[in-house]
Amino acid sequence: MPALEPSNTYAQSFARGLAVIMTFDEGARSLTLTEVAARTDLTRATARRLLHTLVTLGYAATDGKHFSLTPKILDLGFAYLSSSEIWRFAEEDLQALAAEVNESTSISVLDGHDIVYVMRVPTKHILKSALNVGSRVPAHAISMGRVQLAALPERELRSYLASARLQAFTPWTITGPEELRVAIDRDRAQGWSEVYRELEEGISGLAVPIHAASGRVIAAANISAAPARIQEPGMRDYLLERLRSTAHAIEERLRTA
Image (tube, rainbow, N blue to C red):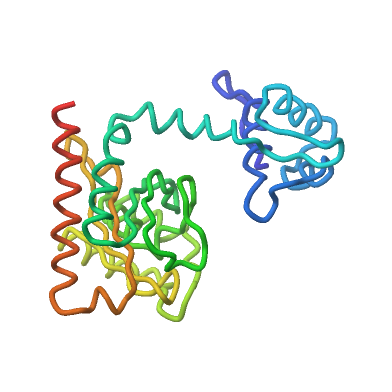
């Protein structure tokens, strides 16, 4: 865990507790005390205290040797969803879109170099990896990331391009900052993004931004489909029209909420 400068507004023990929670992931759903300490760069004594606090509060469980998170940990994520006006009603719109176009639909927010799924309605298993609420994906390789990067102020976008690790997931993934900048500028000009087989070879995505009443982009909505379907005559325009209509409906509710 990186060292941070002490301040009157920084609670180190709380930060360490969050680091312990975040060390559990898809490849490490059950960890020993020693593994948690190593992964968080904490002493065994500190890791033990934090783990047993989580157990006491019901956020983790242990068999005496291994620790794992419990479903109660989802309460932390649901607190975010329930505290934001948009997520109270956007799910209904997203489900209607998925049913209409018969493709998976999602909403995500930009968080640093990644997008985080805050809502997802899967209809087909077209991804090799399971993406659910809370999943993180590098922003450069997905349409929802690109369209939200396009909304960043120039200074923030330059900082992102200078610091992001542009990992290649497929032969089509854009990994050069200059090439990515061209793609982002194009998406900004057209108001939507299409990413073709960059995250996984069998999927393409279309995304549009979702704006708050102030006009600020706060999220993105997406349709994921097989590349061949999006390339069918007239299909891209049809999917974009339905996607824009859904985003507009969500924005209208935000304005009147």
